[in-house]
Length: 300
Image 1 (cartoon, rainbow, N blue to C red):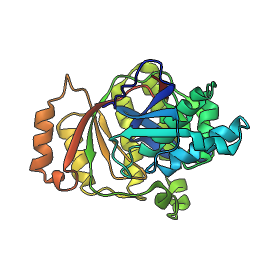
Image 2: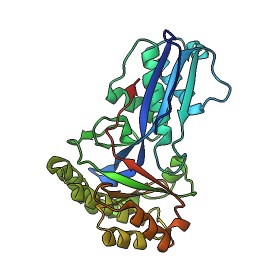
Image 3: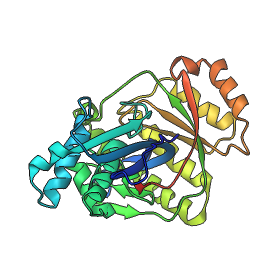
């Protein structure tokens, strides 16, 4: 799901895209603090940056990123008044799909390119966390990431191919509201489980085993139930078993759930029928069949 831009050839425009995430593969207390591994999927925020006055309805965080990028290279702050940011994205907002990270990361890379610079992933991550907690979709590889301060960035081998039936709920939760929840004690209580899940993620990537990746995600999803419980979770787990799926993952600070599968092997129509039969569509009325993809921001 990509937004397309059509500009006249020769227009001074920089366009960048960043993927959404279906929640996280894992998130919790790992290696001494809360960290996550995002689950990038083929749904994108596309950002175009041009030399023009700002739009009246710009997204505030994207404008904040323009200002961060200017400051990074010590350009005058007033240059922001001549940089227009046009964000096109249909990624659901405040559902746990990394819509905000996609917007600000693509804005950063497009703005840098517009100014004649490039951003490496580490610098991009640092710029993003200076604005808000950030998803590891900013990295090309699956990456264990300290989403609050970017201090930890441990890349995995390329993951096995996986599809996800993303279950979208009408329930919204802003990331900053999740971070206000008193959660450290519960996170630490699940640290052994999350260490096991992190080990499984690495093993899954090294061995190209989607079942191991599903096992890791399911462990983390179960642990997340003590912090941000998903409705009908036990029924979802039984559905994973019944349909022989790889596992499920959740948005640890949002409402979406991903059923991890192979669209060539698993019967998607049957799975959707089971969701309705078990009345799970009450909680997740929208479903999207997506593919896990490489992360990172790409210039167009």
